[in-house]
Image (cartoon, rainbow, N blue to C red; front, side):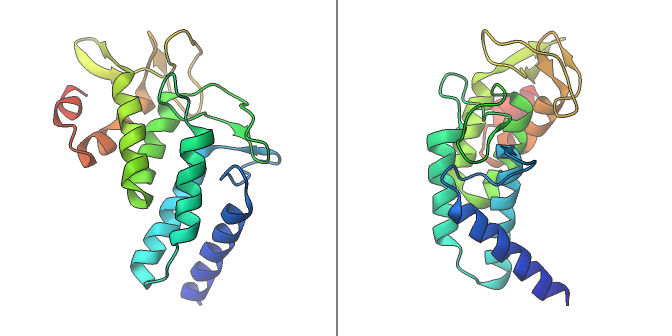
Length: 179
């Protein structure tokens, strides 16, 4: 039945997250995307709301590891790709992943959502007179890819679009309107 299958899936996510010293679950062998794991944390949190199940320990573990390992202090962005077991950076921090992670974090932990949304705001720029979110932090460059969409003059289509929901949800009215 669907309910039992969903409960089992959430239970497997919970066990894997709690067992992970980095707070990451593999997206690919040996590699994790913190944004994907933020979606897992949101799934666990929503499951708890829907069923009354308590997931406090796993969500607290995830929050602690996000704050300690997954956020780049200089930019406020999450690292795009990391080693699942050792937390080593496999990519630079990026706006597109941070925007989506901030949205998912809003379901799991308001403090993490606020922290990531503040990182997005720190990397807000202008494009054609509109507010926009840069894909890469100061001193970093790169091109667009499947995660970011086009990156034009450093501005990411995905990061900008993904930032709308967390800006709105966290009450950043001026940032929301600018985008």
